[in-house]
Amino acid sequence: MSAPLVSVIMPVFNAEQFLGQAVESILRQTCDDFELIAIDDGSKDHSLEILKKYASADRRIKIISREHRGLVASLNQGVESARGQWIARMDADDIALPQRFERQLQWLEKTGADICGSWVKLFGTADRRVIKQPQTDEAIKMKMIFCAPLTHPAVMMKTEMVRQLRYDQNWEKCEDYDLWERATREGRRMINVPEILLLYRQHKAQISIAASSTQQQLTQKIRRRYLEYVFDLMKLEKEWIGDVLKLREPSPSAPNMNYVDSAFSELLKNNEGEAQATVFDHATRLYFRAAANCPDVIARWSRLNKNYGTGIGAGVKIKLWLLSFFHIHPDSRLFKNLKRLYFFSIRST
Image 1 (spheres, rainbow, N blue to C red):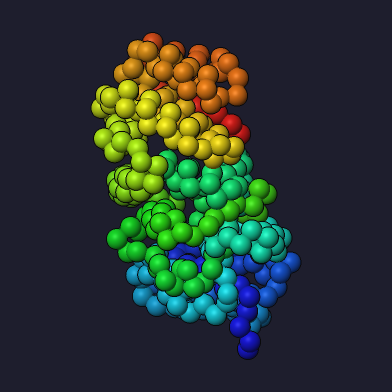
Image 2: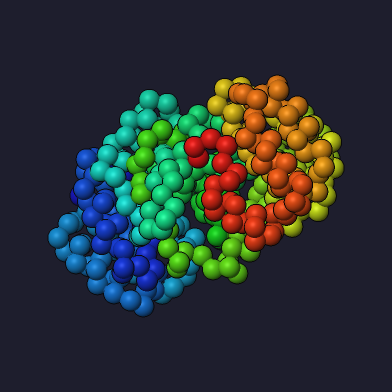
């Protein structure tokens, strides 16, 4: 068989409940020049039997079955086996919309980018939000200061790039964030198609509390190294970094808010358009986290808003006042409940 244009990498581990829907969503793509590499990571349920059934009916499906080694090992094995020019990530419990590959390939050709994500719609629980990731390379790289700027199972990327960088076992549970950060420092360009191309399923089996704690610690380390990289590029004061990072700790100790203000002011000054709006949105979320320990948080945020916001910000000021007046800390149950109610939303993200 000739090499396909796209190699779809789909790790599978005890995924029988949703696997059929995920596979069928790939087989229904309007761009049919692909291979689907499914890596069965030692599943104990009927996942392998389901994959074999689909593979017997469609020669584009390739199955790798072995003992359990974990997600990063599965991803790297899939990358090594890929024959396509592009690698498309896919999870065994999500649903790709039919035009996903076609639209991503169009945007990659149009922009010359190395990595292409998209907007995704959540489903499976009461949370049905649309996650609108930033579109431009500049905005994506500013969002990376705060969190992963691409939704991993919605990504398509150059095979040669992933083979060069590989997923790093040391960063499992945030291996995607680590990859994007290293790709940025290699000078790779990123985009997100401003359309919903993937339905991202949420369910109880996704991540345990223990795994979440590990994920938070690793994510914080990636934030630190990326902030150091960005601050070097912009020639900013590195002593500000520690206080910005304090605001992302589960129970933030009181940071030096003058340093926090200075860091965000300089980041905003050095950006424009979507990149500037992305920094402002995420900085505002961190002021929400700072509010319980910062009596003058409204005045501080208002100074940023005056220079870089898009209105008077009355809604944000009311929320900041409530969080400050009632000392609602980020590790409290009330804060978490407010977060579930999208109390801290700035734009429709």
